[in-house]
Amino acid sequence: MRTALEVLRERTLMSARQMDRIVARLAHQILEPEDAQGGVVLIGIRRGGEQLARRLASKIEEISGMHAGLGFLNINLYRDDDVARELPESEIHEDLTGKVVVIVDDVLFTGRTVRSALDAVTDLGRPSVIRLAVLIDRGLRELPVQADYVGRSIPTSRREHIDVRLSKRYSEADRVTIRSEADAGS
Image 1 (tube, helix red, strand yellow):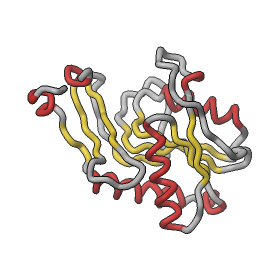
Image 2 (cartoon, one colour; image 1 turned 45 degrees about the vertical axis):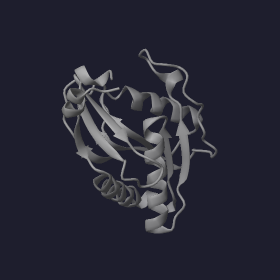
Image 3 (cartoon, helix red, strand yellow; image 1 turned 180 degrees about the vertical axis):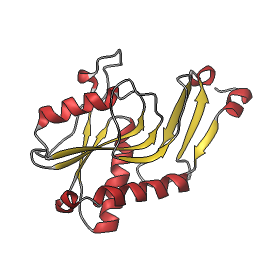
Image 4 (cartoon, helix red, strand yellow; image 1 turned 120 degrees about the vertical axis):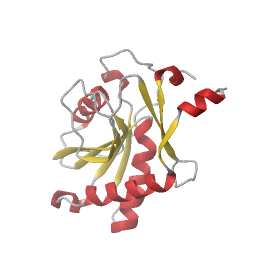
């Protein structure tokens, strides 16, 4: 249970409507390159990128009528830092060789998650191109990773935490908030 002071320290950075507009813009950007005209495969990184990948696939179909391939990736076995190992398994049901693959995650921070996802994707096949789409780029990279499609850049400190709440379909409860480290544990 959070105290009133902790709730006051949490700030909303994006509302559900703002997030919905950003998802639509990202979908348009993913469809723009010539090589994407033949189709794309969206690979959501489990946990944070999973709902965003679903929303992007739905929006791509709504915009273009094209069905985007959709899969989910558990990158824990590829991590080089200390993380929990109990996430659900990957679900990628199509061959990625020769495909346009877009790795999807909610927040880009140090770059370590994306590096792990790149390793996992290349173990599954040899895509013609791999791109990265993120809802939030918060900076502070430890590795030379840059997203191709960014919903919003929000510079943060290491003491801050970005929380993305995103459901499978549009919901007024969807939002992005930021908290300081003192609040992040609650």
